[in-house]
Amino acid sequence: MSITLTIDQLKQSGRYHDAVTLVRQQLQKQPADAVLHYQLACLYDVQGRESHAIPCYLAALSGNLPKKQRQEAWLGLGSTYRALGQYSHSLEAFENGLAEFPQARELTLFRAMTLYNLGENKQAVAELLLLLAETSAHSDILLYQQAIRQYAADLDRIG
View (cartoon, rainbow, N blue to C red):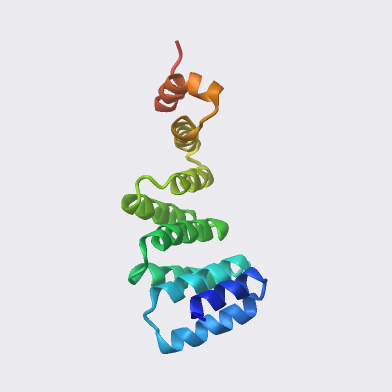
């Protein structure tokens, strides 16, 4: 049985402490393994231990992490910074993630929440409107897609 499968099984069964122990043991053998650092970051996050997750996300992102996990790691890092009230770091993480994965809508969504936390309400709403216009399949939203894009470009526009 692969170690990744075992870690995933422990995580799915809620045995987070055991999963953390196993990942940390593996990291002693393979300290540069980006996937292990990513798994540890996720385990810390799910346990509400965000301050422990940050260095793990950073280690994962500095290594050779597979594309899907890199995208998820940017989201995790930005969200973790946001949860800790470190909004400028959160914004930087989301922007770095979007530079690497410009089509990652989840990064755009969470970035908008961080913009709100930074008091950039107009920009946050505009980004959410664009995201809605680009991703919604709801017939009534599609009907107003062009108008939504115009409003997003200039929320203060009158007449």
